[in-house]
Image 1 (cartoon, rainbow, N blue to C red):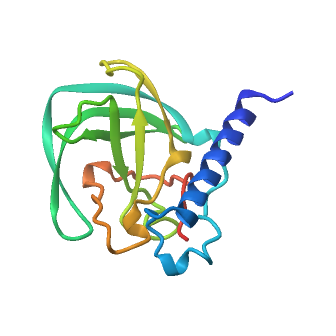
Image 2 (tube, rainbow, N blue to C red):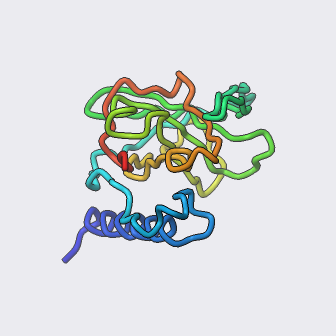
Image 3 (cartoon, rainbow, N blue to C red):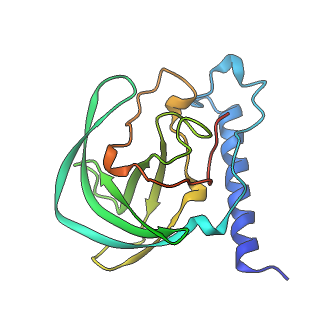
Length: 182
């Protein structure tokens, strides 16, 4: 008999296999075409339910604009729409969730750095895309699964231009979950 953790880990591995197949075969893969035949999948940390945390949401009714530098030296503007407060290993942390001004979805873009950045994980940081089933409200709880943290496409090819996590999203902890360096 399987439990919820086994089901979650199985779904996570299936998601990773699907992503690896996309990167190896799809015309829009960021893996350079001459490297796809030798591409045998990304490196991942083992699934770890301890990095699935419940975050308490604070919604910013009048979101502040945040200028994020990009890997190509430009800046892009996002709006800081929510703060996510959570614990990892008994320590309190916060990350900001962003949207672009013309984005009317309920998703949050959460770029972040942690103590693995530039060592075990991509040097500019990783991303989370969080999907809510409705517009978030103050005090809501939301699952943040760092096992889904991924390196942006610019980690694989310089032809992509990716936002760099702002300093307010630099975690002073180690997040050994999600994608690792290739």
